Length: 361
Image (cartoon, rainbow, N blue to C red; front, side):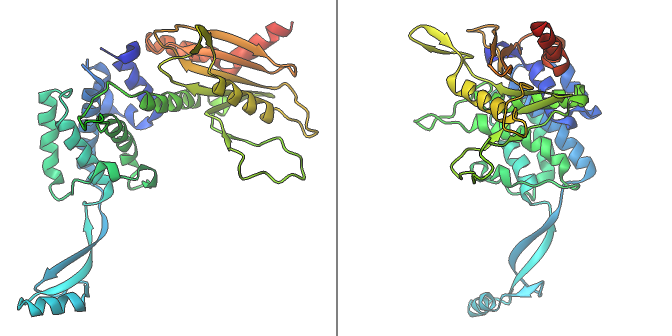
């Protein structure tokens, strides 16, 4: 089964296994072999397996602030509230106390997302039944308003790291299923371009980290090539690369892009997205500077687009005067995943270094 733009759902899962190492664990293996009708049905199965594993370990608990009127003192006495209780002629004490509880944001996000999926027509009835049984263990967990969740503020430590991947899946689900039309009607896309863009970028980075550790793949901040006495303006945008690969004295900066349309079209003419080209040009030319401020020609750039059905496979090469090369490549996500891996290997520094040697010979 495929999602829009012809990408097999199984390939989405493989991309997720690179983006999130947790999915390589044994208890997720059956996701790979099952044939899902749509992306949300697959996400529901991942959450089912993940939450089942969490329950075996025990849901995360932490101390939360509680206020209640009790017959005996617990924690601190709220004098003002207790006086009000006395005026109502109730023999209760207003108390403020800490309680070690599973009712925290980590579990609230999981519960609210599952409730959202239970109302989604794309999820199979049998799978809904399995997930619904798990919610019996979340009886004391509140159903948080997902639109108010500050995803960037969630912090994970040794006790909560198991939640990180599951919350990422929740984010994808929430982002898709909470989209609404102007009339307030819920619309359910197969998988949004915004989510695919996030997944595509992380997949490319983690693929090179896992399969080619010698390249030291990481996202880097590129410094502006300013005069030594010049103080950088606060108005200058930061330049953060998606993926930077290094092999010896060669560097390849990859900017991963996922669009509905790989190229822009103006008056019938197809061209590279100008903003993307300017961006990768800025990365390359500012990174490729020696101590005297001259370009060395040792840094190349690549605009890597997920291939769309409309424009098909593209491959362009732009050589700058200093010797730097900017490549424009497409990655076909609809093909067998082994072919995707083979294509990414061809983009790696060891391959393009051979290509550069051939070009200059």
